[in-house]
Image (cartoon, rainbow, N blue to C red; front, side, top):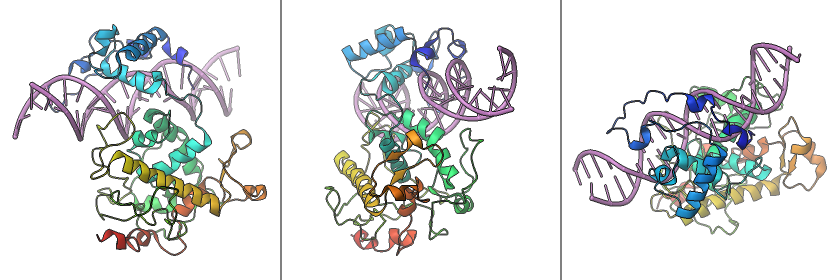
Length: 348
DNA sequence: AATGATCTCAACCGCCGTGCA
DNA sequence: TTGCACGGCGGTTGAGATCAT
């Protein structure tokens, strides 16, 4: 990780670079914040950090547009906000992503997709959407690809490549390995609906106290959740669609999303907790879940739970195990998981 | 040691949703 | 109803760090 202080070198090229030509805004004129005349850009200096942090601690967050002037900073409000949100906030957690955090990211990404970084970050205390996004693009997506999993759909690359259209540009991934021969990912229904199960947020038939009784099937963690609608959760191209949370953009402060129709933050929060916890518990019950990047283990091996260390070396119990079985229902195909038994709950 | 390739992540950009006058 | 200010989001960029040759 780049040393924060090292990023503050004065006279960096980026800070001297002239801002690119602003595109004509579709609506209205450029706001004051967008007129970069006389404003500094590029890495923040420790002095600027101190000024900003002190000011926000004293005056509170908000009014970012006017904050630079009030605080005496030659930055635009957006830059100040970003610096505070992503770096200066006291609650920001520093250091590498922990194994449990990584697992949470993976599962939340599978649930929420690429366009809900703030929501994912909101479930991981101390982490910012920017950090999560970067970590995904630089680490996790590559890890999935190396296991033959499409990071966008969380499905095997071979089948997904023919069903989901062009793959997203891989961020600087020239060292991506071809799908491993011992790919731990099993998809019993490769031709099935490429979209993941997408439960309704309107109804949750079980409490969120560990979600007992949720799992009608052994692997699907949406059991017991009702489907309220059968549209709105697919991309227009039929590919993977994340939870379509209305109003998720422009929501509140980078975290708890408040835009779900008919849902409160608490309900959605509980919903996510339920999904996360249920899946986690389920897998720990069924498998010895290891976090194994398949390449460099020793210090990075993170054993979340294991009852038998011997099985930990078994192929197929690497990272892929987690998502493997989320697609692997012993009884139902993916479509059936979605539209089959659960539809009974959705009829209402 | 020098050089080029690759990786990481802070910062920027444009767009969008909301609130308000 | 309309237009603007503002906050917030996801995608992208590029400087610096690190690795490979």
